[in-house]
Length: 334
Ligand SMILES: [Zn+2]
Ligand SMILES: [Zn+2]
Image 1 (cartoon, rainbow, N blue to C red):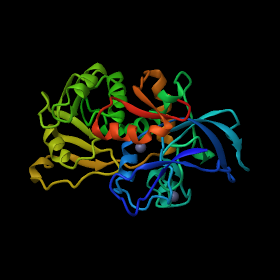
Image 2 (tube, protein in one colour):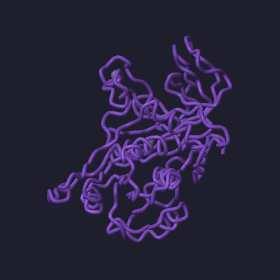
Image 3 (cartoon, rainbow, N blue to C red):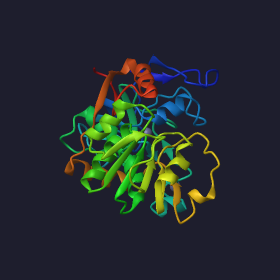
Image 4 (tube, rainbow, N blue to C red):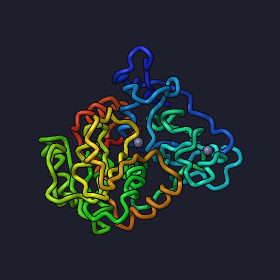
């Protein structure tokens, strides 16, 4: 099969490039399914892996953790899925099932968790294997490419979104793949979205307004109202004090990314009066079930820019430069 493989991480840690390679189609082991990939979205986490921001990826990694495809074959001991079925493969690839976190419904924090497209090969390829217990069935009515961004941008975005309680005035910092999905959920639930983009990014601001944001501006601007909560999707630590300053007393700021540049020191006054600051990590299978049941009811419409699989480096460069709205999606059969 064709696969885009992470090359030379040791010698070129910053912005390492993906190289088109020939690989054997993997064999599904016990509990696994073999999936023929139809689409895989590109996530900002993939950029962090390429840039060496996340330590110790698998050697000769195939990245990609927003995978949509059809099951070709079952390994032994798979009962809940069938050949031909369409599935989504998310970032959470497996957990131990025994630790205190797993037993407490916090499998997203399992210290032995393994992640798709990081600890094991992911979806920038024609085929992959996945643990059947962590695959999602996907709502019908979404084309393969449209469903792909739901699997991380949507799903982990939704985990962050669920931390905001009954916030009415919601700030979203960074209006990329995740925010464009969560803005639709927020509007559906009667909240007002205030979208913050890179200063001067008129195109993303227009995109945010199209999706129902009542206000869109640069991250260096103050919103016209005091926010009840803010979610930071952009990996920029400077946004933390900015978001705290925009949130009312008692409000919350949620950091939704897996990596962020250093947070500058800030006056205690910004946190004082019971503002809270927290991060959100990974996903649980329960997050996925809840989100994928909700999306067709709204319905969430994803905006995707498709690329042939072999153009993964171009998709990544476009994502990095903010040249696309919504999500980039790689297609093995373009
Ligand atoms: Zn992701
Ligand atoms: Zn565990």
